Image 1 (spheres, rainbow, N blue to C red):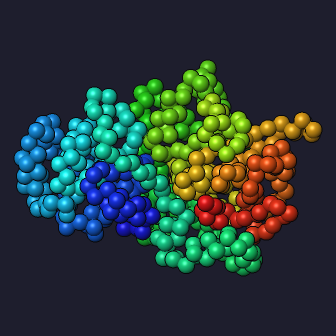
Image 2: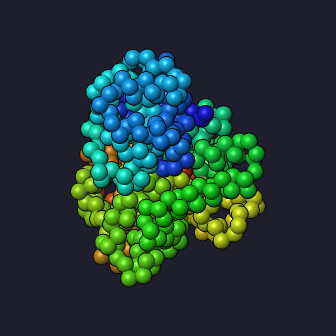
Image 3: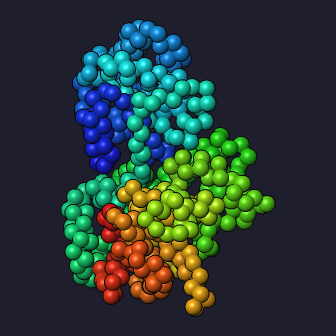
Length: 443
C-alpha cells in the first residue's frame, strides 16, 4: 500500500459528512482506487464490507433490486460476507459500482437510513453508460483520483525529504547547485519513465527491471483500448487515444482530428472527446481564445490538445511498434542521451502535474503582427486575479520569445511567468526559470 494524498480527502469527507453523503471516487482503471479505499476502511472503521461488483454473485446484486426492507439487505450482507456491521462505525464499499446501477441508485435511501457510511469507486466513462434508467443520487460527493504524482512517487521510493526541500526552493527561487540539480533531474526522469500507475511503480521496486515495468504498462494500455472499444464500437475513441503521441509530435497548434479520423472534424466528435475525458485516462488542454482570469469562459471546445494522464504510459506508447521497450532505451532516456526529440514528453508530464494540482489545462496561440511570427504559450494557470503563463522547454535552452510576446500583448493580466526547462532555478529579468521537478509545487 503506497502513501496516497487522496487518503486525507477521504478522512476529510468522513469527518465533515458524518454519514450525510456517500463518496464516489472516480478515476481511470488501475490508478489504485480500490486499494486506497479498502485501506481507509480498515484503518478508520470498526468493520467494513467490500462488494466488488466485477465478481459479486447474482444474489448480492439482486439485493439492490428491491430496497424496501433495508433490515433484510443488511442481514443478508453480513451473512454473505461474514462481517458484523456496527451502526455509525462501519462502512460499505461499492467497488466498480458502474457494474451494478441499481446499487448506485440505492445510495439515496441507504444514506437517508444513516446506519452506515458508503463509498463507491468506479470509472466515470462506464458509470455514464449505465445510468440512463436510474435515478442519480444527489447524496453523493465526487472526488477524482489521479496516477501517483511526483511527491507520491518519491514517497514510494522511500524518499520523504526531497518534496519538502523542493517546495521551499520554489518559494525562495534559489538555485540548488549543479551536483544537486543533476541528481534531482535524473530522479525526475525516472518518474517520467515509470509513471504513476501503482502496479508499474511496484514492479520497478520489486524487480528494478524496466522491461518488466514496460510489460505492466502495456497491459494497462491494452485494458484502456479494450474499454474504449466496449464503449464505442466504431473504434474512433481508441484511434483518437492511440494517436496522442503522434499528434503531440507534430507540434501543431491543436489535435488534428481529420488526420486520425478521415473526413471528421473536431466539432463532430465532441461527445467522444468528453467521454475520453470522463475516462480519466487523458487530460485535455483547451485553447483559451481570450486569455484572462476567467479561462473557462474563453474555452474553445473545437481547439484542444490531448495528453495521457500518466507520462509513464505515454513513454511506453512511443515505442509500441516493438513487442517491448528495451532496457537500453529506458537507460538512454534516463540519462537524456536518446537521439529523438522528446519535447512532447516533457509537455505531457507538465500537463499531468498541473492537472494533479487541480489546474484545468489551457493554452494559447497567437500571431505577432509586428514580426508575423506565430507564438504559443504551452499552459496558462490562474493565480488570484491574474494569469501565470508557462512555456515548456525540453532542454536547458533558456530563450523565451513566446513568453515575452505574450506578456507584451497582455501585460496587465500577468502575475508570474515561468519557463520550465531542465536546468537549475534561475531568473532572467522577470521570467522565473524552473526545472521540471518544481512544477508540482506551482499552486
